[in-house]
Amino acid sequence: DAGITQSPRHKVTETGTPVTLRCHQTENHRYMYWYRQDPGHGLRLIHYSYGVKDTDKGEVSDGYSVSRSKTEDFLLTLESATSSQTSVYFCAITAAGFEVGYTFGSGTRLTVV
Amino acid sequence: EDQVTQSPEALRLQEGESSSLNCSYTVSGLRGLFWYRQDPGKGPEFLFTLYSAGEEKEKERLKATLTKKESFLHITAPKPEDSATYLCAVQGGTSYGKLTFGQGTILTVHP
Image (cartoon, rainbow over all chains, first blue to last red; front, side):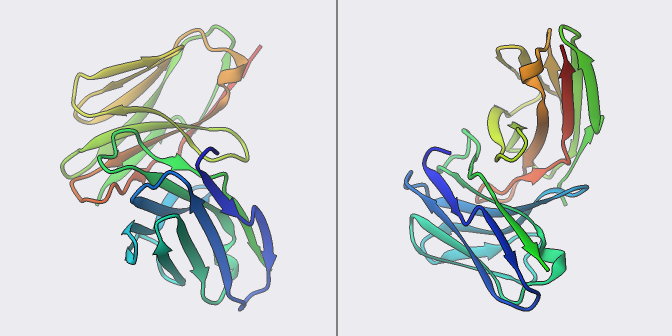
């Protein structure tokens, strides 16, 4: 998607290992979000950021941490991956005002075995 | 706590057969209701934002409407390329643009 990229696109990892997903934007948007998407649950907010070094928890933040040291990068870390964290992870960005909605990345499919 | 419920979960239509998708919501201080389209293996794509009851927005064969309790996405004379999952989301009175999403409606349009 234009202006926002996620890496990696796919990852398989073992239970108990740390994993970091990266979201990179070129739009200079202030607001960035991490969601996970699971069948039967829809999209659920994990963490979000409203500026460099300004982050807060969403509804499903347990087991996840985030960092934002630059406007363009928002990192999501699974501190010790569990099978329940197998999911598709989406990053989203939006400009201040929010009227134009989010722009989503293409997602990272994470499998924890 | 903001809540969004979409119905039906899945909808199969013949090409040209018009229908509507429903999004019911409860939110503290609605700041906006959003519709997105999601194709398999891709991120959701923004369609509309609605702000107040009575508002309507259109894009090609899609029209979104809003009341105080629900929103409808009307699809007129759909084509197979309209097949996708349609997501509804609300932004409540809290700040920072956080959205609460429904589970989506999977639309399949047969030729």
